[in-house]
Amino acid sequence: MRAVLWCNGQQPSAPISAGLVEGASCFGVDGGADRAAEAGYEVAQVLGDLDSADSDRWRGRTHKLVDQSSSDLAKSLSLLIERGYTEIDVVGADGGSTSHFLGSWAALCEAPPGAVIRLHHEDSVTHRVHPHDGEREFAVRSGAEFSVFALSPCLSVHLRGAQWELDGAPMSLSTEGLHNVGSGESVHIRADGVLAVIVPRN
Image 1 (cartoon, rainbow, N blue to C red):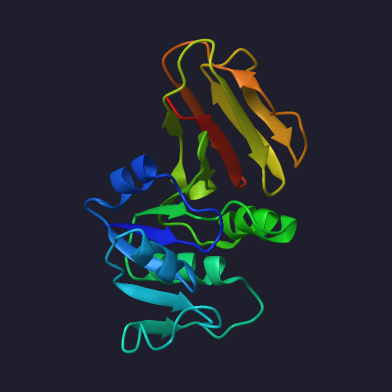
Image 2: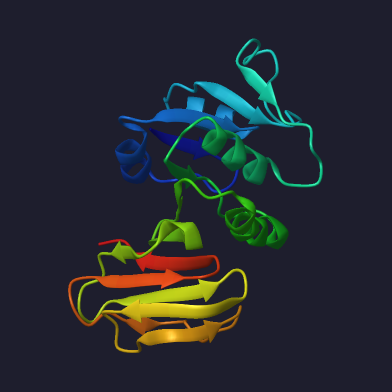
């Protein structure tokens, strides 16, 4: 099952959102539900602490997540994975305060295994790579830039199909993986920690 989580930040352009919502269940992360509805999409349910969504508009279609020790996005990702969703596309997470931007990446680290998670930006897509995923493959053509960041400490990262490859190398949060370059049709990556792999849109 695939879900779209619609956040309340910078809103996606129509071509991006249209391609994602088709064939998926759309959930609003608090006030993101209002933004999704304004863009013309049906929202199955509103998730979060519900402090910014229009409560009258969504009466009977909310699921309150009260734990204040994590963000609405982190809680929503966990809930959908518990419900059995195996692919989750996140839109509207860009923009706003710096803390929210960094919080989106932290949510990728907090979310349990069991689902492919993608954060969609206008120019690229951030893919969460979890150690339980095994090896992941991403379409990165020869000469195209991509970046890899360790969201948690990794003792062993394997990367093939790039100008700068890794064979069991350690990696921590740093600029080491910034602006690598594809050397074929795709890159293959696996790690024993959580990675964020940023791939440009074709």
